[in-house]
Length: 96
Image: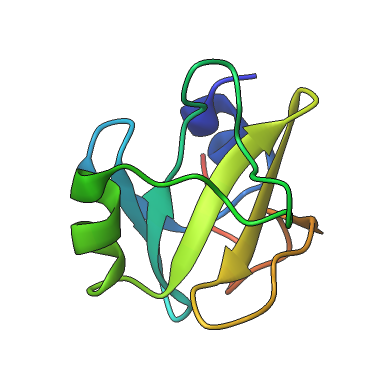
């Protein structure tokens, strides 16, 4: 499932800042989307592998977001890595 499909399916009140890279969820914060590097998403200590550009952007966001095993997860930048589902955040966005 794409990120947009996931956000829509879970009724999250989001705004895309930069497609496939940055988005916000209203009243929650800004998320940096991390993608695998050479097929790897995590290092041996279960930390996300960031390139130089992502590391620089991480200074200005609140959360990492990533797809793993076909599902979307997130965790706060300053927290220990964990697989927290990317759903039930903020208020639901009404769609007609």
